[in-house]
Length: 401
Image (cartoon, rainbow, N blue to C red):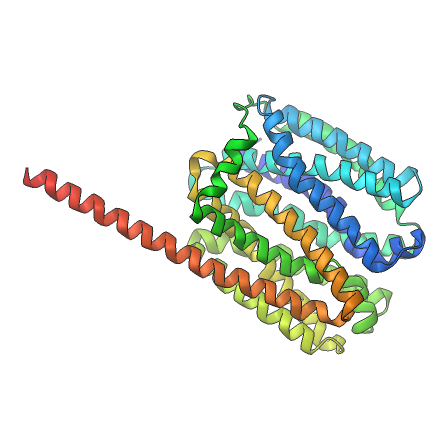
């Protein structure tokens, strides 16, 4: 089997873990009604997941550094199955919280490991597209997993979703066993060394792009189902169709992001994507009560938001190619912290301002990300020109001597 197909296999499994992570946003109102809590309180299931993901992933990746990458994929998926089984079988909001924590830790390890494996399987000139392929797996969970989960939750019981994900997780383990080649582990990287990268201003600024971009996205996406039901006035079928359209656009956006990065570069792809993302969320705030306008805006929002994913990860790897695994781990942690913060801020906004306010608040977050991207990329270009000038002067002195 060619390496390209192996990367697609990882993307298929990424679809599964992505569905487990993203599905809560699609069924938030159902979970809230069944457990007897408010929608804002149910939204904190995303906060808990993201915090466990953010803080647990770097620690677990450091502790499992010497474990073979294939074995680590298998171990993480095994724990992932257990986490989803708890959500499906054991009742109570407390056990649901426990399930989200277990699923988050296993998902974090799988995501970082699969991104590392995919980047090594791909040739150097195709790494951007390889990362985009894995992001496509997560995007596909929005296309199929989230809207399908919405239909199941409306017709049957939302717990069936997690039971099904657990069963598919077992099948995914066997798929990894037979398809992904065995590779040796890496020298464990102490957490102190991982965090040391954050002391470099250019890396800290670049990671802040991820934080504000996902913060703005999460503020809106966490509560998108109640937003469409209560503000836009869609019915259950309309929400499912809207989520399906959102997912298709996110898939196209992630693939476009990888293609655009390889063809036109990071700067054009990232900054233009952030700009469109912010404008669309602001337009969503203005046109929230019109389903006719909201529907295409949902698709444009998904396209622009997900086009930034592979581009940002490629950019971060380029800043520290000798520590690509650490950079991917840090970026994933920052992303999840932003998801947690977005869910929290969105919940606060719903209770203190209004449900309709989340879209313009989210737009503000993405606008900050776009401005930060322009600054970060400008500094990178300035540093590259300065380094080239120094090298030219040194070569001229050498030639003169």
